[in-house]
Length: 247
Image (cartoon, rainbow, N blue to C red; front, top):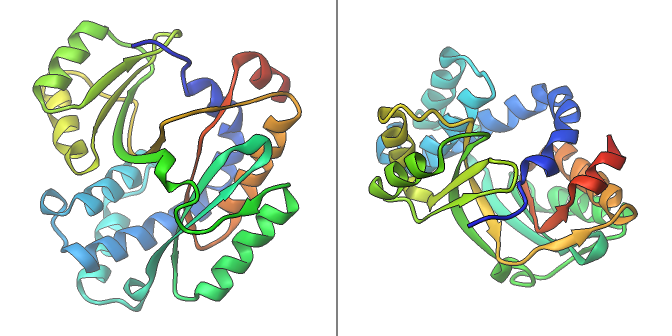
């Protein structure tokens, strides 16, 4: 399969993301604690924890910090009493947006999410309004690589699909629970991925133009600035040409 690479859609936001690293660490620790509380402290037996561990390591979190967070969850730390809440809505240009939160106060969280939508020309929707457009998957990404080699190893390890983009980037899609196993198999074959994450993959895309793209990015930034928001997923597609105007 071929298509437009997601790398073009994230490249120009890297500096802003790097500036948020402290907040990102706090959110990852919260997810580690919650995942360990709900499913146990063994990443091999707890897919949610394995995904959180992979994300922590990808963001250069130390093993010591990571292990302390897991221990807190297994020990019943108060942070582990938070609940996962999913909000859905529509952003600029008709984009479908899903927001994954961890919160101990639903009223506070929904107020912050609703405020971000209202400031950026979007609308918070009802449960199910856009969820049907997304599927939860594991995504193992290579910026460059040999398509045949990666495809053979990935499919043999149980991957569901392998997508090659116009710029040479490759995404391996898995059932989200199987992402760690497939990634381990790829590494055993000498294929080290640039990133691996559990994500909500949209079935359709909404093309962003020079007017709607910056509005969408502003909304995403505002949502990610909310302490209770863990992840923001959307189906907005920003072309290389539009992305170049944002840099």
